[in-house]
Image (tube, rainbow, N blue to C red; front, side, top):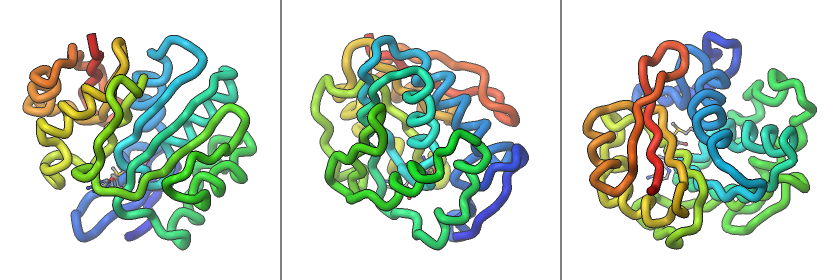
Length: 218
Ligand SMILES: C[S@@+](CC[C@H](N)C(=O)[O-])C[C@H]1O[C@@H](n2cnc3c(N)ncnc32)[C@H](O)[C@@H]1O
């Protein structure tokens, strides 16, 4: 695992075994803010929001959601699955909290050091339960999540994450009008989401990427 600096100045992680980055090399913060906040959190109505993330990784999406919850005075309950937690020697080098400039360093550390499998309050506006599991072993409660951040490695690198049975399980776990958001824009993923029940839209992607996908549970 190696730390890299992406084009917007924010750090990310490169995994040589997969030849894959955790974020877009055009900008990690820029990509996460576009895909998961602008086209995810901002679309959810209400001030109590339940999120499920696939792939906790560096904790960037969780940190941006926490920042958004504080700024907009929302209460977020955030569930995040991760099979291979990032080591402390790596996450301590990530510059997200520094760049976001909102005094979030303590919260970023708490996101990484808090216990797994337990709901932990990180801030009055934000609680998290990290679940150390393989997606394949996870069965979600039906009608539970307002928002899903699907942030697995790409379907060409990790096709088993994008199979239709996972997408169907996630569809059932969402509340009506719930949103599924992912940076991926592959036609086959779009069709699997549609067959799972989502109403899918192709949206402009973050800088460096033409499109991304949103699904809404009717
Ligand atoms: C694109 S990266 C995550 C990006 C993360 N949201 C972030 O902001 O850093 C994909 C993540 O999925 C995790 N992952 C890989 N295989 C998995 C599996 N079978 N089940 C759950 N998580 C998995 C990886 O360890 C990695 O952290």
